[in-house]
Length: 99
Image (cartoon, rainbow, N blue to C red; front, side, top):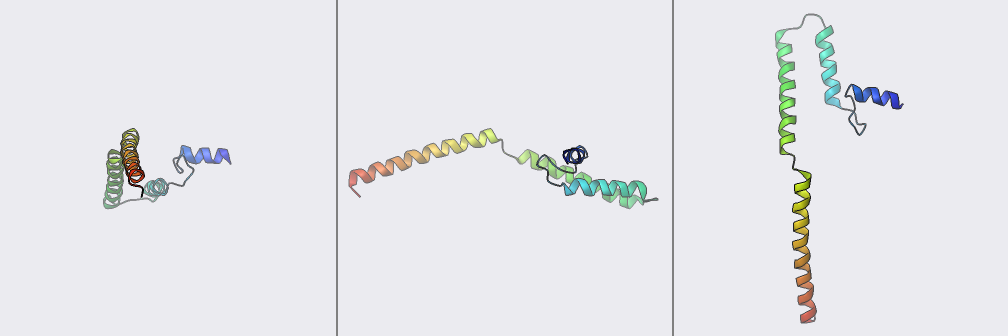
């Protein structure tokens, strides 16, 4: 079973988590169809290339917009520290007023 999973990973049909990549499967099937279907119209090839380009552009833009995890962790730690000081101030105020 492990060998089969390694073959699937080699052909990029599954990701590192072992989940099936429908995009890669459909791309391979479309390429096989273009290669073995016989005469193919220019419109079909142009539509296929346009879909690949748009998908790659989407992946590129999604990768650019992904936040850096280290920066996000630092921001969250700073916000937690501010909240802890606020909570401590409120608790101190309540203990002084006796509420």
